[in-house]
Image (cartoon, rainbow over all chains, first blue to last red; front, side):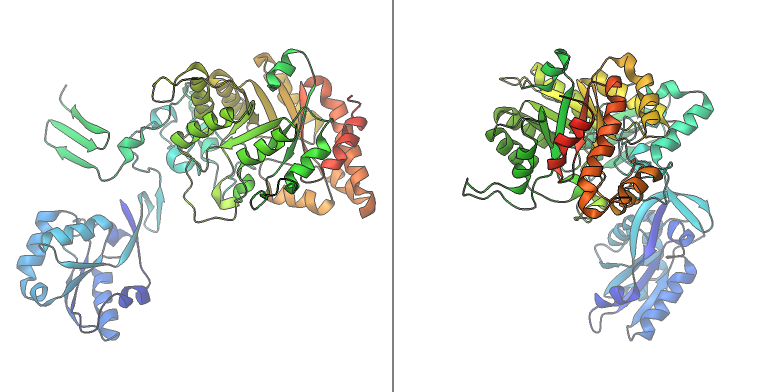
Length: 239
Length: 297
């Protein structure tokens, strides 16, 4: 999931010009789970803007629950058909969702003016209803086969691939004594699994071209093609 | 001169350390930066002097410029190079530059994280880790850059690396040390150690690698400094009895005491290793005393 956190209301309001009419769009998937842009927060944002003298033409978090704002055809239908009049009357859209959602609204509204209402902070695991945690940095060059599924690009503050730095203290990271050293987590896990030999091979430098933005993915039921500055990689899911 | 030459001769290799100034070297060549003055105190007492690279992620004069100044002054530098601030292009380019400017020894490290320093909003680079850095440096020695392209006039420097004997789990630290040796590390300087037993336990596990090790010493200046290190310097532990010992003497006697404590430790461990790396944190003038207490000529 894409973890998002609302920007402070003062910051949001600062970018809305006098007499600008706003339509508020939430997301019924990730932002709903983050309490940053579900149905309730979207309705609340409309009220918070109105209370500050901003004209809100309407609001919606395209549903049902679990539906992602970043599903373009659905969002286009909801905004341009179900909310046609309110959208037409708006000068801009305030989006309570991730950066992908913001771009989806641009596409869905044929280039409408957008204001991000959230900061997109990371992609994470929904560990519980109130706790989301990052375990993957989306680097495109995965090495967790060698680390028992724990990602050093994410769990190590220095993104070291060949083992820890010398800075861990009582199992904690030198950068933040509150957080565990990612490499000690990897070590303890592999030790428990009896697979410490996985740590032996030299891990070569990352292929950063796979991490260069922007990237895209062409998908079909039988194969997918990942496109980055590093080139195109096509993989079958049938052979 | 490359430190590896000394290790090969069986010398007990002694190195000191200075941190470059926060500022530029004066254009008037008669004005020495303080780091060069500190290094002059070490002259004739050590084989070489490490020059730190934005140590603790605090922005300073480049380690290469300070290393070259030491070399000009007749002091052998160990140029420290970290992965924190440079991608693989810059690291290779700086290695070639260092060799071109006469540097014979380089210590290849990951580097302290930016959050520990004075530029907390900077982008941490860490394009490579220290093992990959050593492997890449070895390539430059063999005539290839990291992309496999041939280079002309290969560099020829001694490659040092670091290891922390205080690390827990030690096995994980040793796994990385082994990778560094396989990548091309030719000698090691350890993180500061204060406990003979800790060092002995470490040495027993790594002597099979047959790679020269210099035990790391950070001079204890005061009980406050020792407590500060325990609280803020990761991977270092100063035992309470040493904190009490340095605190047991008046301030004016602390230089003498610090040399006694460090020298006593080195004397006890010197037979287990191939050298000592003394980090005096500015007190370079006590280094001769340490060596005397350690009974090292």
